[in-house]
Each structure stands twice: as C-alpha cells, then as structure tokens.
Image (cartoon, rainbow, N blue to C red; front, side):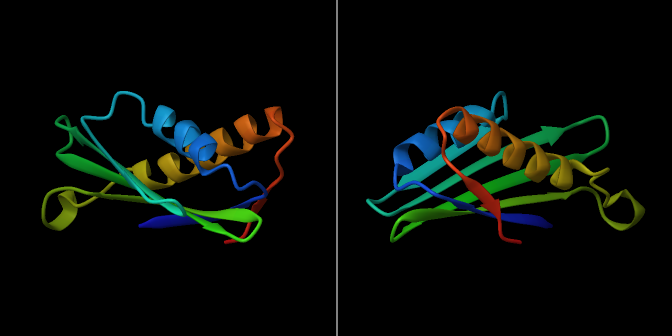
Amino acid sequence: MHIIQLKIYTTDLQLIKDIVTTGFGDFDQKYVNSTDDMIIASSEQSISRNGTAIMNLVVMKKIDDHIIADVIGAAGGQQGWGNMDFGAEKAFTNEMAIRINYHCDEKNIRVQKVA
C-alpha cells in the first residue's frame, strides 16, 4: 500500500471530487459516496496479463478552511511470488497527486503535501 496525504486550501469539495473521479479514467469499477464534509472515491482495475488487481481510494475531508485528501493505492496478485504490484500502487498515488496539484494550480488553489 502507498499513501500520499495532501492539504488543499479550498472548501470546494465538489471541485476536488470532480478532479479525482475524472482521474479514475477507464478503471473497471468506480464507487463514490459523499456527505457535506467528506467524500470517499474508489476504483478498481484487474490486469489479467499478470493477475494483478489495483484498488485505489481517495478520502477527502473538509476541515475548517481546507480539505485533507488521502490518496491510497493498493495492489495485489496471486499468492507467493506472484503477489507483486509492479509499482501500480505508487504509480496511481503519484499520478493522482500530480493531477490534483495541476488542476488546483490552474484555479490558484494551493496544495501542500503533508505525508
């Protein structure tokens, strides 16, 4: 599992949700659930050539004047030596963090990597 936490200096949760869910692209399964102050977005993709499944999760929580986004990538495969993700989880978290940074920068919204 690989996690990147971002602090996004806006309270526009819908905007961040749209950036994140558009970034899921052509994943096999997508799930989004939200309240007034929190959104959970998840996607899953199976890669048959190596038996790997990729599970991606972004949890966004509005706190005071900002949003905390936890970008989580997890992947797994077959038992034993086949249980490798070939960097898929890090690729997702890095790409999603870059995506959030890029689109927020276009709107003059500051993003800070927390962890």
